[in-house]
Image 1: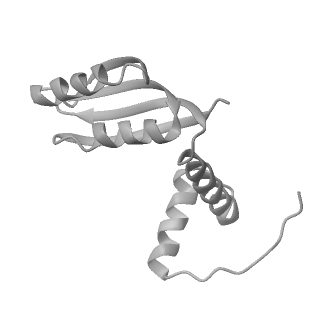
Image 2 (image 1 turned 90 degrees about the horizontal axis):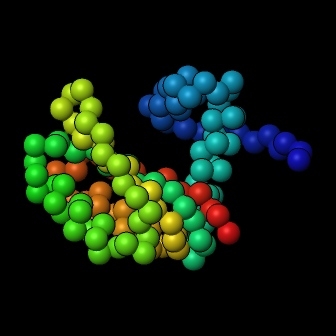
Length: 133
């Protein structure tokens, strides 16, 4: 595949962030980082369609808040056709990391992850998917 060069104009603050992204992710240069970001965007855009995908929903929350675990369990019980398994780890900093393995249509998994991530008390959440069809 041939490479095409083009110029990009960025605000100085955004350029600082790009350089930090390059360094944090061990890219050789800005071009590689921009390429990776564009490819990531393309893949995520494809997730919005009806492709069959598999992946994981990663959630971080405080384990002392029992209503979070109860609400997550209720959501999982209502979505057994999408959920393969879940695993909970208790981290040193008094946090719980829950990983939910999922398989199904991308739109359904996105909706499921949004429901879980938006629960009150979830500190951080992310859906990771890969196309399997």
